[in-house]
Length: 129
Image (cartoon, rainbow, N blue to C red; front, side, top):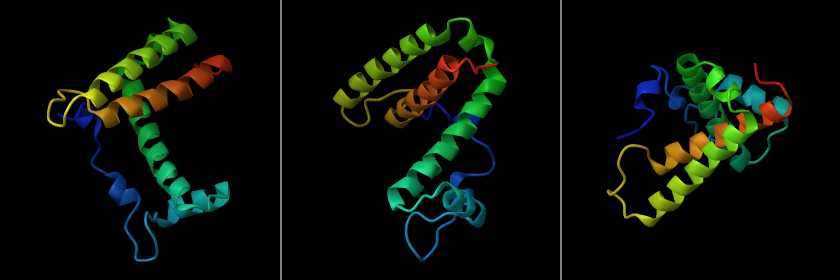
């Protein structure tokens, strides 16, 4: 079961990053403009941009559900605990055979960890509202 199924929108990442015959992964015109503006030149960076876009959308949907207080209350120490929980979960999930994982997938855990790291940076900069 995909933990984030409830957060999916009607527009999939494939709608945003439409396939092309030039090279994989390719991006739609808007995303190509963002990549060009950012100076992205490698295929790996294009893949990272796609994942970052998906994660930002996920974080936005989750913030609508949680609000900012769940993070503000515990601050950076709370983020460290959340990251530690995700790392422990990842270690456990990676040690299991495929099919033994229930609820949150490995990918879900990595996505949460990436978003917690970004939130941690905002907290550290005193820029979390």
